[in-house]
Length: 428
Ligand code: GKR
Ligand code: MG
Image 1 (cartoon, rainbow, N blue to C red):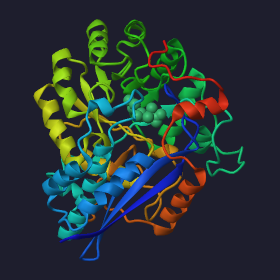
Image 2 (cartoon, rainbow, N blue to C red; image 1 turned 135 degrees about the vertical axis):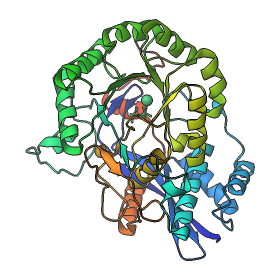
Image 3 (cartoon, protein in one colour; image 1 turned 120 degrees about the horizontal axis):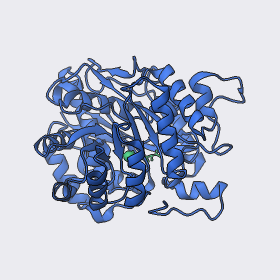
């Protein structure tokens, strides 16, 4: 089997005005769809976070990918490394999503190869990763504060009578009662059991109040997580941690860096989770030396693919780390890949993050994948089990061209509604 072509299609996906420590989501989230065409007439799909820089790196990789056998993942990885040069921690920025382009290229190409391999042998990707550790993958409700009045058309028109999740997606949630209402609407629509609140947008005590309100509102045992994306000092993290002790399932990146996280962990005794201080294999020695976290949030887009994430899972076992899964705004190709991967990792025991309910647009045949009681049933179809809806892809590519965005920059979006607003690596 040989790869005969590689299509790289940037798309822009409608996104609500979600707030985080770095600012505000733009009206569109950028993704890039990778399609590998094989000489037997089949195609394989991958999806990665979009940016002009990642697209250029994918374009540069194309030359070495075409002509390869998709089963020869080691050769493909080596040739991409040789062509693009390896990234490294220094290439990472401070917001949670700025990472070296190389891991995105590896992940987009590798997932598309797995899709091709699955189609070639008539087996789902999960079977190529060692088989199912579970038949259903649990996801978590991922709550956000929103900026009233910002953002573009979410596809609801002017329907102010929207109810349930559609209404919660449209309207701002700004106080603890609003956050509880958003959680109720999201859980009602999708059945999620665990709840994560994206913090770092408002003064820490207000966000802690929202968590405490959810603790009151939901049955005891509902796993709750808070993620301020490292914008709090160690002292603030410890003080808020004291308020949330016994309430949080895990405390996600309250403060920056492995040493700071280790100190908060020591002083509060709360399980700490990260997708910011331990985000690559290079970070593992530091993670172990500091004992920076209890749970690592994997992400195949950032760890370099599905196989790399399985390697990470073994490291987590060896060093006593739990494993969860991080997400960024995405469509169904990534969600399918996340589901096969999570199903194949026995020690990935936490409900995975997903932004999927926030996005209305989709590129796969049949529209959005459906959650069943907060989980996705692992597909038995060959490959990822999703097919490309080419008209939808063309429409979202057209949306990309029209919107003029070339990278994610939440600070610039925030400045559009609050001129002069500045990202601060430590705000509180
Ligand atoms: O979508 O605003 C967002 C999140 O803050 C995202 O960018 C983070 O990467 O979900 C992420 C996280 O868990 O840190
Ligand atoms: Mg996080």
